[in-house]
Image (tube, rainbow, N blue to C red):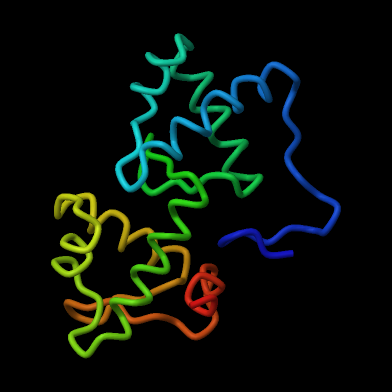
Length: 150
């Protein structure tokens, strides 16, 4: 089965201990509320009053479960926000000027650095590939459902 950019057997999923589930129930809404600019691991740890390592470890489990996406070290996005970003990237790629960092930055309201980090993430997971200054969508991609649902 495909879960974002990851593949797994149909009956397989990373399991959470009860205390991890309780922490995840507090953590995931914080990521979702961050929209296109979620809090960093250190900020999540401070808000949840948990050690950074514990929050980081839980986020990695949630990553394996497909509930979050890791854009760069210590920066995770809720899967719903990542699907929205993928759909936005797909819309921009369909325009004549294509998908580039400036257009993505303007559409998301993020800074240039963050916009580039997200575009590089999409390149890494196979949703897009960089071609000079633009990013083009790949035919078969991890976030293809976001593009096809339009």
